[in-house]
Length: 112
Length: 114
Image (cartoon, rainbow over all chains, first blue to last red; front, side, top):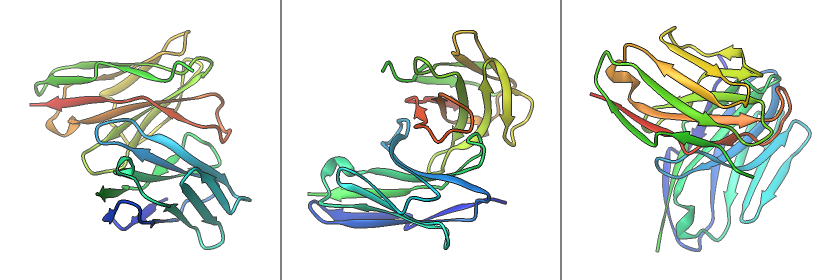
């Protein structure tokens, strides 16, 4: 069974600090990996998408990395802001995009 | 971009009732997927429609059914509601099946079954 495991489950950081979220997956065959930000009760919003050949992708203060050999990805948030408080979900696609495997998400709380 | 819209935003039903949720996809997108997201969990794939045909289905019983219309909008129907059906239902649209395009999610419909 294809799985996506995220860690930590939740974390609290002070405004202005950095943090890194982890995603390990067993999805095969692999097509692409996406990171989404989801505010409570809202739909996920895409942050980054990486295919097999890409190692890193940035979107403002968000930087995602991918190691397709070890099947690991990370999302680094730089200089966190209060608005970064949300759940961050790792989503991995098999060759056909309809087969999306979602992680349970990491809940990030940024405090002033 | 018009984005993906869903209606209603919130809904309360009782066990055994039927419900219809609606989704209008991003303009130009011909593929719509539906997901169920329980509190504190990642979304679970229900099914996908591509040009009005079901293109894939997750592990959900037949009482979860759907439709896609010629304008690519979509409906999710759930019959004989159960308490465990309480969740956030997300609709996502994309342009082509198999391409690594940005998949746009709607804001979701929060369904509560009492």
